[in-house]
Length: 179
Image 1 (cartoon, rainbow, N blue to C red):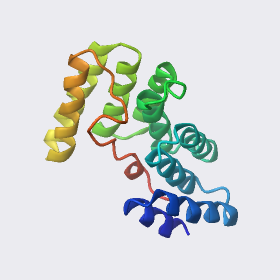
Image 2 (tube, rainbow, N blue to C red):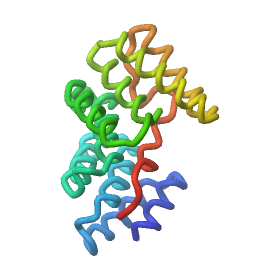
Image 3 (spheres, one colour):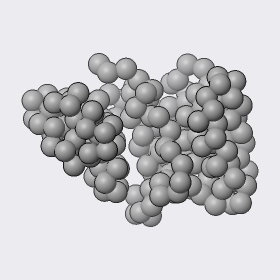
Image 4 (cartoon, rainbow, N blue to C red):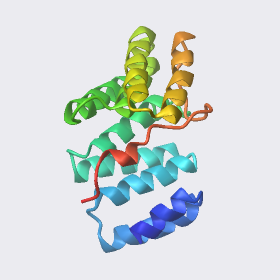
């Protein structure tokens, strides 16, 4: 059910993914990866509160899961719904994820930059996104670098990133292996 749910989500069918993922939760309720996939599916549908609940459930199941921590931070920093955003908590979570991750990860630096932008700390946001661009460029990830530059432009214009803006979110699900 988890594999099918993730496949359906990747194919752009979040409603169908949710059905499969909820079935997986019924069978194995203590699996953080399923909670992350549910969070992503609800985000794809624009159900920000439900998405945040599932990011938090994933963190509760595995407090060392960097992808869950970063996913919650990203949503708290970038959600179009102001009632979901919490820039201060997003900064704390992003810093925690960075501290837990070996080496510099451009996706995590992107999350921290978005969190700083949410709190109006645009100089810090610009500094973090610049670091993310350097790391991404050094790894030859042209797609990520292009997306980072779009967000960098927003921060230089003193604007926070919102999930509805035209640029992809960090690949948070790739940050930790399934357990």
